[in-house]
Amino acid sequence: MPSLGGLPEVPCARCERRVAGLPWGEICPQCRSELSRRASRLAHRISLAATALMAAYVAFRMPPDPMARLYGAIAVLATYIIVRRVSARVAMEMIR
Ligand SMILES: [Zn+2]
Image (tube, rainbow, N blue to C red):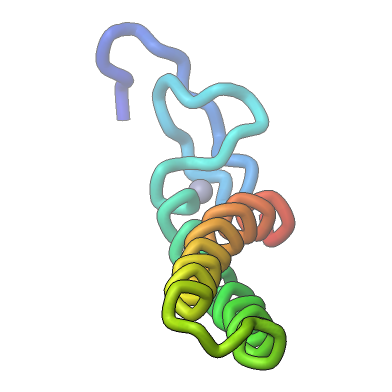
């Protein structure tokens, strides 16, 4: 297939499908989306485990007043969001 705009066709580092304009050593959009789906599933599992640990910590260590409980709930939510974001990026690098 001739490339549009004169970009060289470079084979994907994973499936070896030729893609125009792909940087050398990079993976094609199809592989990338497949990897990001897998990374996202993995990140979901990791972040659920981290969130469960955080929730257990908050439940045992926080004083039982409503404000502390609210901050605890926010911390648990933040743990999920941060761990999910970080582990998705790490997983993306590792499962290549
Ligand atoms: Zn590929």
